[in-house]
Length: 264
Image (cartoon, rainbow, N blue to C red; front, side, top):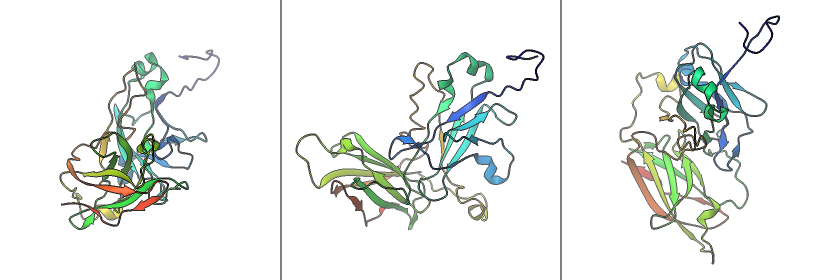
């Protein structure tokens, strides 16, 4: 039985289960550079539906066999412009989805700048490294605040080598007379327990095997733009170990922090 077209026609209706607009966290704009969005299980060779990328730089997952009530997706870019993420999203039933505006099926995951990110000239930021037990602090989260418990003025995520690029928001510079150098409180966060591969050959087969899963919640139909997990504003579960220090940086320059942020 056709839903839209006359019965004289063969109808094939495809419905959106999840629309994705990956965001460049450094610029706050849609990522134009091609990235991959795939099911996490695909890395283990398990067949899963494709997440299609369109010329508009949007990605779409359609209702089809293999799409359950929750999907875990990897967001990957191979040239280190962005740090990969692993986010689990709930999927509305088709009946619920059709009763709500399309915005309730759209997510905007932010990807943080990686080591090869195209940094604009005169951008203020910090390059640093996180370590734990003498090894790289893989996938650590980083926040920057004004001294004295001020608001967050920058976020970053370390890559598989523990390296991060933290770009400061313009609000980091106080109104009035410029303070140069500017004091910034930088804190890094890691899981309380370092992950252990389930088998010795897993890291070689899957370099992203230990990406922390970030559990996104259902959107509020009255405020579907409020999605703090996608925005990278929520620490992954278990990220309770931290280290930090105050750093003086020059405005309009990239500060290289030579002392690692070390978590025991």
